[in-house]
Image (cartoon, rainbow, N blue to C red; front, side, top):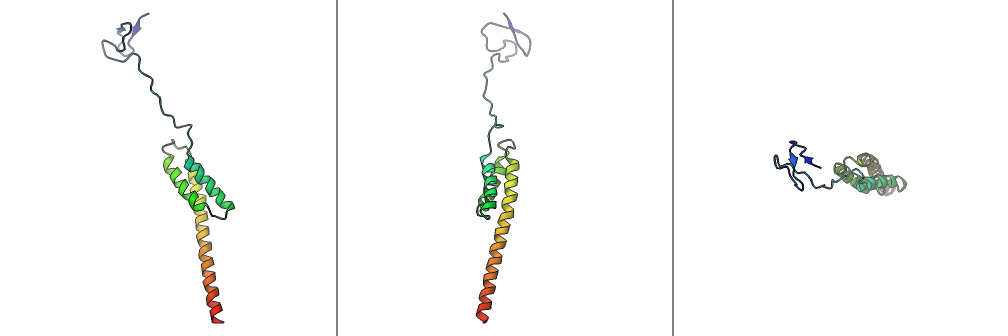
Length: 122
């Protein structure tokens, strides 16, 4: 059974690896392609989970959730967008809780200072 070149149509000799006319490879080696579609973005998942845990822990893990979510968002390009939504959600939730925790600490510090000023006057 004769083989013909898919590029120029020339008949190829038995056992030849390339076309004698145009040089097209006949039996191209199969290369493994990297497919990142099935891989998961661990940082995006961890950031989202940590931001959700901060709901239960009164914002204790929100800073870690923010850091992991930012890393997950940056890495989402590497994973063909996989985890981008989780990373953005983790950033939003974590930012809200970081702001709440900072405000609560500021209010607590202000209340403590006002209490010490009032107790010094009496």
